[in-house]
Image (cartoon, rainbow, N blue to C red; front, side):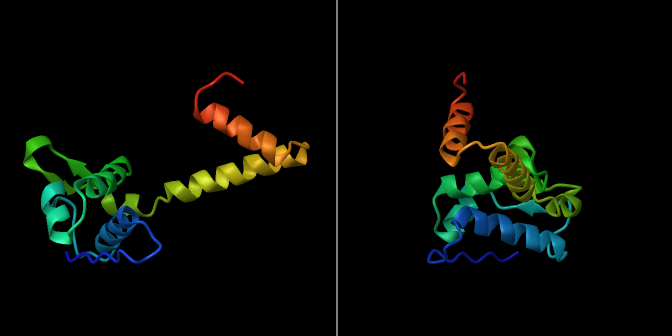
Length: 126
């Protein structure tokens, strides 16, 4: 699997990594059970910060595209192909869009929505 990162692109580097790994899975260039390079190795190969690669791996693991097996390494998840089709970000945006529309329909101002959202995200009482 060959990954190419464009540091000049508007898309964040970790997102580029995620998209390229998912594309490789969908196009059968990598298969369930195939090993991935360690975070350190991939960061060195691509001249990236370890934290950037770690973030991409964390998000891919959250989405069950990869799985970490402790000291044995990181591998493509058995259900990776199915899980690549899940767009969690799209789901969140869709739900937020619907919720914000319902707030606006009830007369809540954008400022009130932002304040309430901030309070909820900071786990403060409303």
